[in-house]
Image (cartoon, rainbow over all chains, first blue to last red; front, side, top):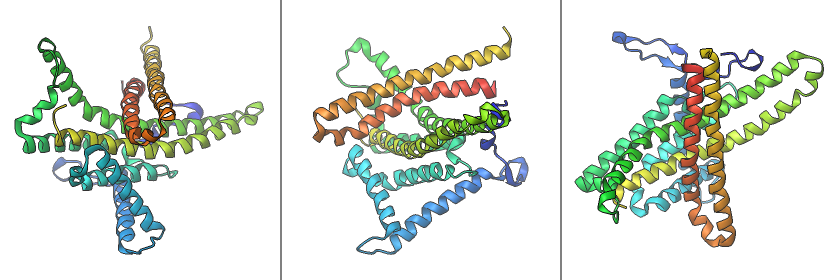
Length: 253
Length: 75
């Protein structure tokens, strides 16, 4: 599918095998996605380990960055779930940091955005919903299913409401994974398409070359917006995780 | 109709959903802002909720976007 200027905007999401590994016919190859996941993990771990090793009273840059992210996630979490939600802090914090770091590292030109692969975001969403369901059932037993039965609904309306609640619960992992995936994919495609406009206009020559800087300016503005989206989607992912975990913690409306 | 042409028309129609989701997100933040200007002290506490609403509204636009992408690149 060729776009403007013959530049394929989808090519950047192509997965290539770096190390072929196929034991027993199962494809376990080390791909560029795996490589970037390792890089993301290394960056997050390095930030947190180095940031917390100094323990200075007056924090340096990296320490204050680590403290800021901690404070930010902790305040978001307690805002949604209250104090007892802090037992989920390690889970939400690792999710937030992984998504944020992979979104941000994906903005480096030539790098690979891990979160633009739907299998990665879908795995996260399934993990989150499994935690919600398993924790909810272990903690509250059958009372957890009170989540689907809002109180104060007239009896004849209840079957429909329960059906709607169940469908809305089941669509959560789909929307959670598609939102992150779609945002990262759309942003990177848009950047590539605008880059393709510049190349195509310059290649066209003549009067078209004069207006070539216009899409370039837009591409710069889009890059700035992409950084905002990269942070915002990590935030939205974390806060929706908190909202869903809150259902497991306090079921019933 | 030529199937390829129908595919592109379908993708274009699916993109309309993204614009409609933009209306939803704009409504949420517009109302949040007008409420926040009336009562600035309560605004910070409701900030996460505005984002949850915007994320839910935006998610539907993303569905439309994914449908367009599936039509263009998968089908």
